Amino acid sequence: MRIEGKEYRTIWYEDNVVKIIDQTKLPHQFIIKDLKTVKDAINAIKIMEVRGAPLIGATAAYGMVLAVQENNSSEFIKKSGEELIKSRPTAINLKWAVDRMMKKLSGINSDQILNVALTEAKEICDEDEKFCKNIGINGLKIIEEIYNKKKDTVNILTHCNAGWLATINWGTATSPIYHAHKKGIPVHVWVDETRPRNQGANLTSYELNEEEIPNTIIADNTGGILMQRNEIDICMVGTDRTLSTGDVCNKIGTYLKALAAHDNNVPFYVALPSSTIDWDIKDFKDIPIEERDPEELSHIVGLDENNDLKKILIYPKQSKVLNLAFDVTPAKYVTGLITEKGICKASPDALKKIFR
Ligand SMILES: CSC[C@@H](O)[C@@H](O)C(=O)COP(=O)(O)O
Image 1 (tube, rainbow, N blue to C red):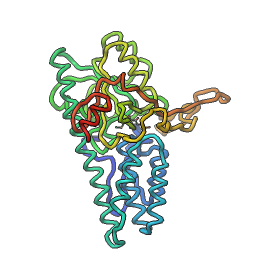
Image 2: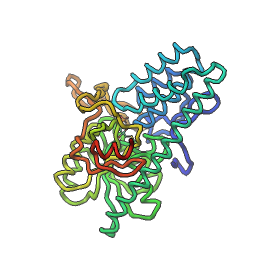
Image 3: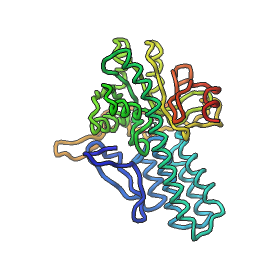
Image 4: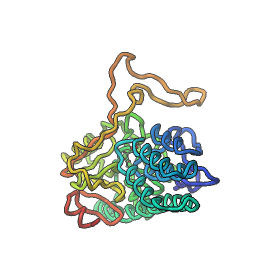
């Protein structure tokens, strides 16, 4: 997708290093960073220089490439995979990507192993791009249907960043929006700010601006009143882990949006590639929910008067802070799942039918 008119992917391999766009500096600074070791990849995932379920999966895959490049003994590769999986707990894509890489690398000779790792990591990225594009083609039908009835701008609410920055390209929840815009359907996006890290305001709005899609940032609690005023036609969000039951784990605050949507008869869709499905866990209470540094809540990063990035304290120094990063929206509040294979109900039978 475009940044200042130039096409980018979010991660690529060049001259023996992995290149990423440092998302902690966006929207104020556009910096391409080199990851040289598997430790660099683990750190980039932990501190969220890369984030979003499919992209952290892809970074884990390239992290395995860097591990192989550093030391291709099977002990080192295995240990690196285990550490990559632990770097963030909630998005299933991390484990999915490491398991896929480990399977591919097992039994490969040392003179071929780097090439095999590189080919598989690139395949994971190519596949994600293709799946996200298909999610867009499938989700476009829903937006088109609303437009054909309404014959006016379609207002879409999204939470967090399930955009191209969270994937390799296109995004999940944003892909239908980009496809609708390219087709000439007038769309406007309500962008939840998404405290505490502001992925909506910092990343989703930035992406949409680059693609010239009208959007408005709102505080996280604004969605409810907009739905009551009929100013939201549809909600579209991403997911970090979707259970085979249809329950959806996504950025903290998604659940409350789904409840408001349910109360106001606003369709609530979740977009996902199959790499985000957890076929094992059956009870959503067993999903590991990441608890992050309280500083992400108590402090905020922005530009100071000299245009330098600065972090400042915004809460009382003594206050206790809890920073849970994800919540779960039960399947009963999800109108449908938009996947690379088509749209289905958020139910075990529908998911099984479409994927197995
Ligand atoms: C297209 S990815 C969907 C999700 O990964 C996204 O909605 C999200 O919650 C990202 O969380 P983050 O903590 O920024 O990694």
